[in-house]
Length: 144
Image 1 (cartoon, rainbow, N blue to C red):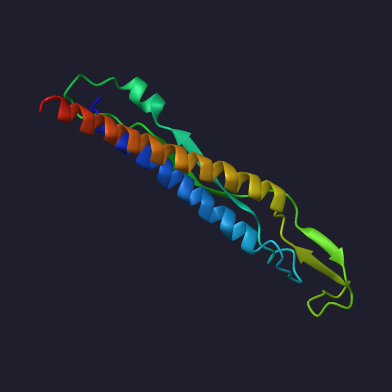
Image 2 (cartoon, helix red, strand yellow):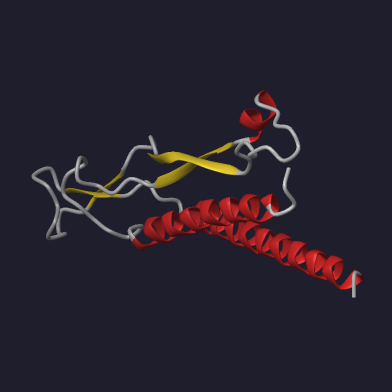
């Protein structure tokens, strides 16, 4: 594995956590929206990640050969299956014929926890890239 591959790995993790942070922001910004139909209600979205390590282990490369993928692979974004929250509010302008409004299935506490975890993971991977850069610079200075 090339020593520069660490930047690709840290970069893929940072891209994945950036997507996670964007989805948390989207979920939190829509947490208080209200609709009159359960089908139009916003649903919380979460990323699905997969490690590329198994691909790398399945196809071991030789030294100097193009490296197989390692890092984090974003498989997609899924919507939460949790039901929308129905609230009886007949005086609300968006209430349906039965007097119910519907709120998204977003849990703000869970979203804040995801935000903190994603932020720390992003910072850790930035630190990994910075440390790798410092080590490479120190290695280059050894020859001077």
